[in-house]
Image (tube, rainbow, N blue to C red; front, side):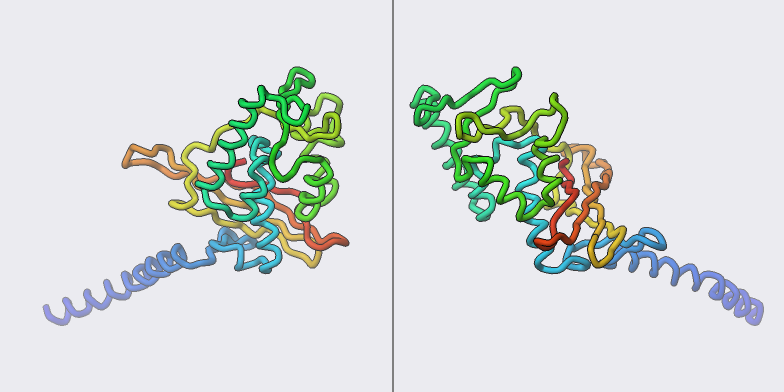
Length: 249
């Protein structure tokens, strides 16, 4: 019986040990920094795994500028503070001061109406550090390709396109329509990941992967993911984004 038991034990060990190694391997793969999605694409936890410091700085700057054209044009007034990574208290105080100026001046600043209606859309006078289209364009062209800047602000769009920013009598105004945040998105809890899809000497394609909780109160919440494409191209002026998105797009 002892010989039989020993033989049975060795057989079971032979069968189960590869499964144990497979399980450990899968756990290591899940926790590793670089996770293989398929034979061609890799998911990274950090941009530094495939972008240079210069390209990462460009990406971080684009993350501040991009919302101006996708739901948050009113951020133009605090843009200079966001670019300086100012504290939230400083940004809030500055915004409150601008609101007070508008109200106390009866919504006329230096002879300019604080609000203008164009094609049934209210545009609000820019009162931050950027008060002209040229200054905004110069800033955006340090991050975005020229054609993409035109697309973002609908400069080359059809007649019914709605620019986020326009000039009226020499002053820049922004579209007053804005949107709220994306439900369930909390990158401090579930950070973005990045799927590198294509790389060459002149182009880099990758996806930003956002994570979204189904509930902020239900302990049995689920987490869904969604991917958003980004494209970097090498231009005569250096690397620029010809396509950009964030996980809150």
